[in-house]
Amino acid sequence: MIDHEHNTASNRIISDPNVLGGRPCILGTRIPVAVIMDSLAEGLTPAQIIDHFPPLTENDVRAAVAYSAPRQ
Image (cartoon, rainbow, N blue to C red; front, side, top):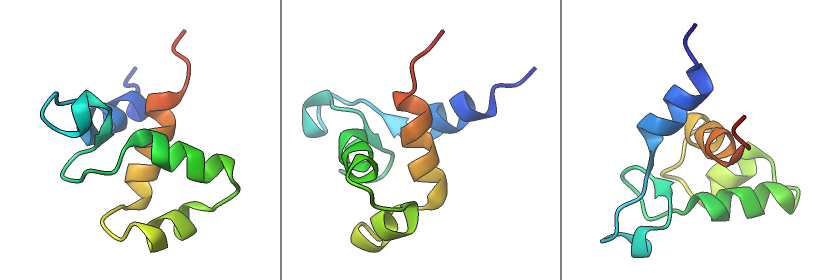
Protein backbone atom coordinates (compact mmCIF):
# COMPACT_ATOMS: atom_id res chain seq x y z
CA MET A 1 0.00 0.00 0.00
CA ILE A 2 1.39 3.41 -1.00
CA ASP A 3 1.10 6.28 1.46
CA HIS A 4 0.19 9.07 -0.99
CA GLU A 5 0.08 11.79 1.69
CA HIS A 6 3.57 10.98 2.96
CA ASN A 7 4.87 10.67 -0.61
CA THR A 8 3.45 14.11 -1.44
CA ALA A 9 5.00 15.64 1.67
CA SER A 10 8.38 14.01 1.14
CA ASN A 11 8.50 15.31 -2.44
CA ARG A 12 7.46 18.87 -1.58
CA ILE A 13 8.93 19.63 1.86
CA ILE A 14 12.63 20.21 2.44
CA SER A 15 14.74 20.97 5.48
CA ASP A 16 18.02 22.50 4.36
CA PRO A 17 20.33 24.09 6.95
CA ASN A 18 21.18 26.74 4.34
CA VAL A 19 17.52 27.73 3.83
CA LEU A 20 15.65 29.36 6.72
CA GLY A 21 17.99 27.76 9.23
CA GLY A 22 16.75 24.29 8.35
CA ARG A 23 13.07 24.97 9.08
CA PRO A 24 10.85 22.76 6.90
CA CYS A 25 9.65 24.70 3.87
CA ILE A 26 8.05 24.10 0.50
CA LEU A 27 10.54 22.94 -2.12
CA GLY A 28 11.67 25.76 -4.39
CA THR A 29 10.41 28.47 -2.04
CA ARG A 30 11.30 30.04 1.27
CA ILE A 31 7.76 29.51 2.57
CA PRO A 32 7.87 27.57 5.85
CA VAL A 33 5.42 24.79 6.59
CA ALA A 34 4.66 26.63 9.86
CA VAL A 35 3.37 29.67 7.96
CA ILE A 36 0.95 27.49 6.01
CA MET A 37 -0.23 25.72 9.14
CA ASP A 38 -0.62 29.01 11.04
CA SER A 39 -2.65 30.41 8.14
CA LEU A 40 -4.96 27.39 8.20
CA ALA A 41 -5.30 27.70 11.99
CA GLU A 42 -6.32 31.34 11.54
CA GLY A 43 -9.14 30.19 9.28
CA LEU A 44 -7.72 30.91 5.84
CA THR A 45 -8.73 28.50 3.12
CA PRO A 46 -6.11 26.87 0.90
CA ALA A 47 -7.21 29.20 -1.93
CA GLN A 48 -6.65 32.25 0.29
CA ILE A 49 -3.21 30.99 1.30
CA ILE A 50 -2.31 30.50 -2.36
CA ASP A 51 -3.54 34.05 -3.07
CA HIS A 52 -1.16 35.33 -0.35
CA PHE A 53 1.72 33.13 -1.52
CA PRO A 54 1.42 32.72 -5.31
CA PRO A 55 4.26 30.18 -5.65
CA LEU A 56 2.16 27.67 -3.66
CA THR A 57 -0.21 25.13 -5.14
CA GLU A 58 -3.00 23.15 -3.51
CA ASN A 59 -0.65 20.16 -3.44
CA ASP A 60 1.87 22.24 -1.47
CA VAL A 61 -0.79 23.08 1.13
CA ARG A 62 -1.78 19.40 1.31
CA ALA A 63 1.87 18.43 1.70
CA ALA A 64 2.28 20.88 4.59
CA VAL A 65 -0.73 19.38 6.34
CA ALA A 66 0.49 15.82 5.74
CA TYR A 67 3.97 16.75 6.95
CA SER A 68 2.55 18.29 10.12
CA ALA A 69 0.20 15.42 10.91
CA PRO A 70 1.22 13.22 13.83
CA ARG A 71 2.84 9.99 12.71
CA GLN A 72 1.68 6.73 14.22
